[in-house]
Amino acid sequence: MKNFGVPMSKLTLSALAAEIGIMAFAVTVPMSAHAADKFSIGVPGVPPVFVSALVYTAKDGGFYKKYGLDVTIKPFDSGVAAANAVVSGSVDASISPTAPAIRMISNGDVPLVAVQGYEKPDWILGSMDTSKSKCEDVKGQAVGVDSPQGARWVALQNMVGACGLQPDKDIPTVNLSSNVGAAMVAGQLTFGVLHFDDVPVIERESGKKLTIVLEIEKTAPGTHYTSLFTNSKKLAADRDQLVRVVAAHIEAIKFMNDPANFGKVGGYAKPTGRNLQDATNAVKMFTEFEFWPNGHPGLDRKRFDKTVQIQVMVGQKTKGKGGIKPEVKAVTYERFADLSVWNDAMALVKKSK
Image 1 (cartoon, helix red, strand yellow):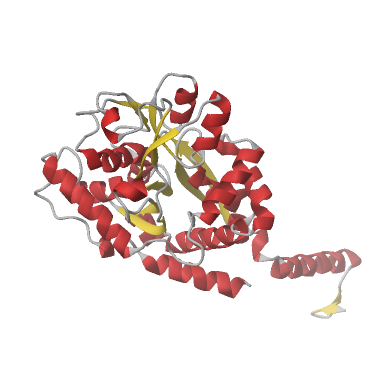
Image 2 (tube, rainbow, N blue to C red):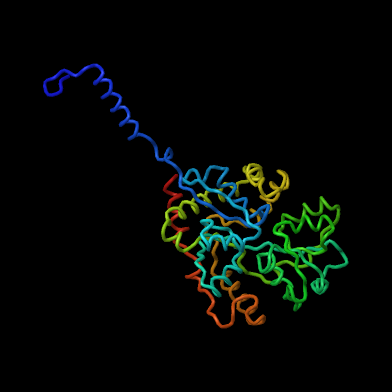
């Protein structure tokens, strides 16, 4: 082999061969070998409440990785605190309660946008005293919630409104993040706003029967529970990342709904503080309840409208101290949610198969 008539040395040939090999390797490296995009999600509760089992499944089950994402999960005292972190840009997205977010967007025009939802609230008001089992019995009694005007606080507001009571006016509240059940087991509280999966744990650890005083789906049926929110600026700048996050969630939810995977999902949910058996039972309970939306975006307009209606009514009753202020216009569904992200994510899931 010659170079302009000059024989090439063995050293030059070796270097050329090496360079060709490097070039060939660079061409054949798969996309999965590239650095994954970093993304952060805030979740409600310390420890996180069980809705967060979705993001832990997506992470530990490899679904985020499949879509080129390196996701950090950050627990906050409440979903409202997580939403505030999205507004400030401290995290890229959060699982946060829909009602407070509606209030925040309406009253302050904060840049929150829902890209996926978890429609059906499972809130209950529980009592450790069987003699205190009626709505009226809660008047003047301390009730455990997450934070001021957080998800549990709003749920309490919606439930005790059935008997004309208001939190922090007729009912003192105690802010405990996701540790309401633990306080009830310890005998520190008689009443608490709880999730379904709290009940068997409280009964086993306390040795007492928990009385369900009120259920959100009976006192305020058809409201929307919580959503995956991002910042509108983040959505505009990195929409592709949000589409891939939701694609990972779509696949993770399908995985979670397969009974053969309940045990695995229970293991992935360890950060929620549940032991494996309790977590596995909770996965079964919540999938039967259709807690995580399987095959749809989970952003039902009717549930949104009902939630807005209640927040408007509360705002009028409290003169703007709670709910949507009477002088402002309530957020519209089109401003609240961007369904195109979920639609593109579903298309991506189908394409990836």
